[in-house]
Length: 208
Ligand code: MN3
Image (cartoon, rainbow, N blue to C red; front, side):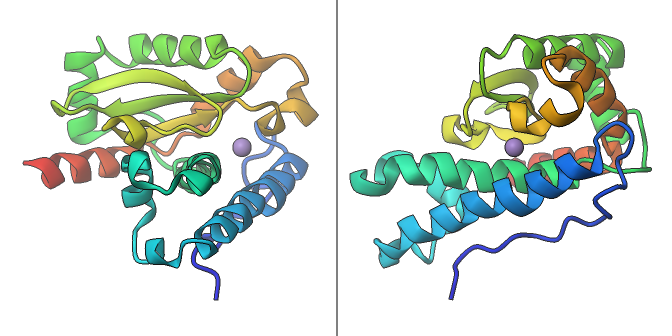
């Protein structure tokens, strides 16, 4: 039996049209995400003692992963974690602005939504090559915008991601080609701030 499986997308492939096209969604979810899962499972099969661990446990202590599968777990475990989060924080409806405690924190710690949006967009645009821009909760429960290469994930450096944008070309190339900034502008209105705010409150509870 496979350890990790593809989580439900939660909406139809064309639900994010026109901002994210149906064909990109199908390939991204069915092919890219599934492949990360397949490769992660294949790596773990070589070390069944790791089967008990959650994905977060695996990624938050990569040094504890046997060296022969460490890079596979990093890349493919990261890929599985990142895409599972990505599908959840996108929506065809939902709140299109931060709400609740998260809104207060963005106002307090990131100078408000407009400033957050500018900083997050810049991080996504400036990530050289493949990677992600993130909104994370750091070790001191403070919000931070950050970016990481490839499928690396903030849990690898002790932070908890509550929002991420995939800037690998496979996430936007069919529709936007080299116009990454345009993709970013069309991604942001799809963010489900209800879900992101829920994640933020979960993190606060976890560490309080
Ligand atoms: Mn991707």
